[in-house]
Image (cartoon, rainbow, N blue to C red; front, side, top):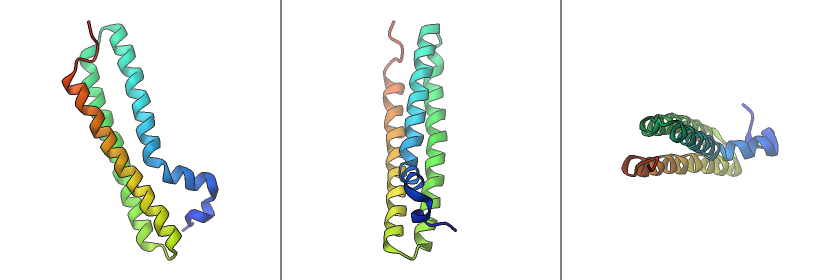
Length: 113
């Protein structure tokens, strides 16, 4: 199994920011969908898409957390364990961000008339 150090700078960076990348792609996709839905008069579909995409993104982040924790337990070096812990924490924070974004969509009308 390759270590984080063997993955190089780009590999380690994408690994550490994996949760934020998932959140960012989901965030952009939801906003594009909401803009198009509002322009075409399909605002009622936006809350369902937001919830489903948050569940999908959270599932990916949970998988990243599980992967990071398993790698952390198998790591021999302190630096490697630290990197895996940070990757898991960033993915956890991304889950919280996705959950936080659901609340306004369910309370406030998406497309004002």
